[in-house]
Length: 379
Image (cartoon, rainbow, N blue to C red; front, side):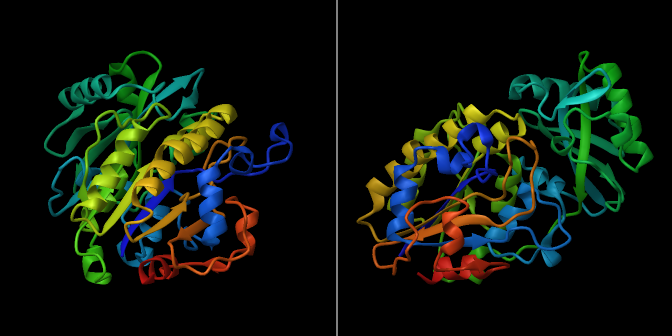
């Protein structure tokens, strides 16, 4: 039996008055998700352990069954692994966003959806102007980049920029004097209205490969456009499959991602973790119409083709978000998320649709820690 997790980042939400009191997941047309929920088993999953921030780095690591108390080191080291930067002893790696500011406030966390080409140029310029033996700026993808501080201390307070849209940036500066100084200096170098924003520092994590924990997995892969998910995959022992045109936004190459997953599972892979970022970005932007579309795209352009191609191949499919990113709040929240697990032989529960409300009555109940991954891999 082969296994695939299809994850719609930030797909879960709250009831929205403009949608008649429905959540975007309830409102969207999702025939494949609903069919898989009806024929499979569902439940809720607590993806953010107590005391941890409700970020994608926490939630996705937890979904794969890891104990965050033992392995969590923030986003920085995950970004480093993804872009091939080998952390050395004493390195502190920290995620370095390019953000947009306006009238002294954080306008958005993604520098107006800056391209990878332009983001790379700007990060290299910052490294030339501000880098030294202790400080290094490393280009990543789009607005997501890396800052490495030799001898840096990870025990500092940093505010994720996506949690503070339309707030005064000066009141959100890190507790570390060097990082605050770099933010201010960056604004003198970058085009007007742009700034760096470092957050989520850490050292190199120690994660046991999934192939060791779950003997059902002999070979696995991760498909994503997001550096931190690639980093999680790297430390989890998964190979990263690159898909041309995968952007992390609503214009991503859905068909290319679906084909890559199908090819991997028809080939030698036993396990695929397919991550789609689009719904999360729409939620952060407060774009309700786009969030509904991204959910429908996930259903029709990812889940549908994968199901149709593999339904007779002996496959177990899981579908879930990692955390809610409500459009009316525009940031992550720590709430259990709905999930479904389907294969041809599973005993179905009574749930008829896939959404935040229906799955409360699912046969799995509410799971936490590694219970989801154990249940998924046992099928």
